[in-house]
Image (cartoon, rainbow over all chains, first blue to last red; front, top):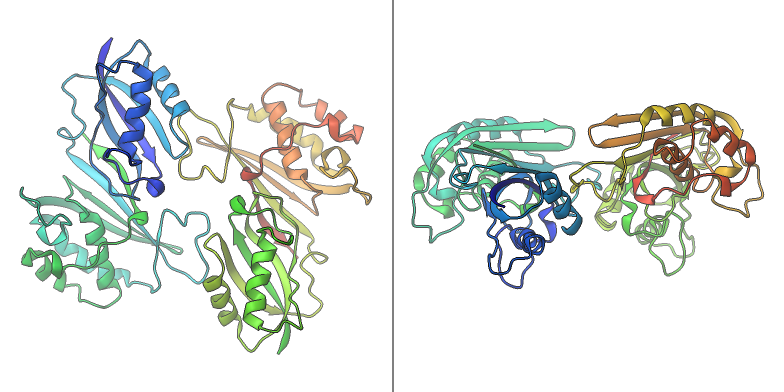
Length: 248
Length: 248
């Protein structure tokens, strides 16, 4: 039976060249589609798995959402079991649900939460070293919180877009930026209606510049208004980033 | 200045052949001694780092304690910085303290805590897959707790010793075994005055047999009394085991 299914997926992005499939290269979408094709066994009807977003190389996800039209007699539980049996240990299907044919994981997404995790200390984060960005200086959290206030809201985020050739609107709404320190960890939570390419990493890289005292909290307002990528901070390393949740 | 130093060390044991140094093989002790030798730069006075215990290949530690006599002008902070700069990313020195010359990390240890972590579920533990043993059945926690009651106390643990040629006393005192379920995780905490080779892993393997219903909780008493390794359960996989704390 032909049905549209919603998938919730976790992955450790360390050894992948991002979500989006590319011929001859290991990607998350590529790995998932390979297993789905094997499962349905119908090469005349190639699988197209639609993700809520496209994470960069090395970026992780705890709950990427995707949808896919499948022609299969397996039930939801059996589809999940099949996927987890054949997927590598760094990709997990956490949920499979039959859904309306109209459900589109990307177009229907109304919000997303990303988390960026930094680590600073005199020891080393041995057990989660692949999921944090190690800092060599301790950032000032209060300064970063002040800077973040300028970024929250509906703005043209062109200064924070990693794709210089991007032709569409770069206006997005950032609902919240929460910055939390817990032990050696500094975690940034971003929630918004959509994110441009590298946007969370450039926002984090810029906030860290503020935290290190390289630029002032208020200068972030000027960076935003400049609509010029070269004014913002560096793109923070991919390993600290994780897609946490997609809202529908 | 020549001093005895206490080190507290974390490591991800995945890619090491255990704690104990062996020529031509990557071990935790070997890696640490190499960096210590480089730091002191005195080949006439080779370093001997004494660990509180010898973890098996693939076993992890959050707080292995060790001591070492060093002839160095560096202070404690500088020693730690040097170590963490030259050690690989999966070994961390969390603490360095000058201590009495009489302090011996192995002989003076009066208690140790080990944790064994299992995981069971329909998804997969993508982010900590190297630190858990994945189960394909769900064990009965209450049965395992009943069985654990027979193991706590001072006993001859010969049935739970992985070294058949071990000539010394196999009597040990296990103070507590705590078994906790939290979401998809089942964690076993063992505290005792000392542990035989593979003892925690054989205890866990046997408790899991009880949890799976293969053997009864009360049969653990017979296994203990048999003083025969072949009566106990299998040696649980190394990746679930972590040395948590050494008491002095």
